[in-house]
Image (cartoon, rainbow, N blue to C red; front, top):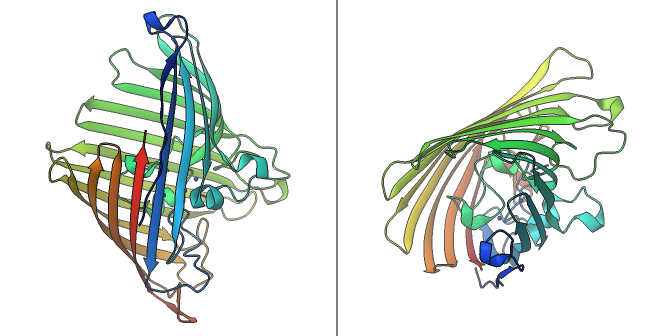
Length: 361
């Protein structure tokens, strides 16, 4: 699971834009870019093996300097074709792609798109792609908060399949339908012969408001254990002023209790994210979240009340340069059951501080 995963110094490399012989018409473009993010997390529960909670897939090492995500990407686009290839390394790749074949664990993106209309922005894309679900991505600099929410960590970061998408001429509506290998999968689980489906609808009322609806329908288990899963992600992003922005998100899912059952286990997660830009260099951001998975569909605790956890965080960001940012975040969890290991016992709370340094070119 997403379940896919994001202080010190960082290296990033960028190669300037290279164009084909048609570059004068600006129709053929190849760009190379890079991103890297180092991090240090101190978990006050002090896990002895330095591995933190098993439901976190980014910044998930205690008391050690490490690479969350290093990424090198090549992208090509002209009027009728686009392609992306990105290779990665880091703890995000290690934790999020642990179930994949060795050769695939370093692939962040590998996809090709073909425009299928001469007059409309209508495309078919296929391959390994960023997930169509959620308000946060694996690229730390693109997110309001330093670490990822429980909702993001436990829903797909990436997906493999094909999608048809349409963007209206005025850019306000984006609509897509997807056929997928599964829930954050490159290769299907052994014995799984089913196809999964998804949709995404994004509406931009103006430059200040974006509304998004995304879904997943499918079975991510072997044939003998088949359980249908239905999941919906809804969020809105609001630029309230030049300095203040907020995102409101809500995820809800249902999965069959048993193969062929008409009864379902539910889980859900509401989120409030806020950011205040103090000036060109300094910013504050915070998040309030709740994740309820009492039946252990996504996060299994083997406790009476399952995973019912509140989360809160506050981060301070400092842009050293336009492409280098230093971030520090304090974050805590409070759970209904004692599910967090501390001093050879279990506690209801977990508090930790993370610092990261990210650079991109």
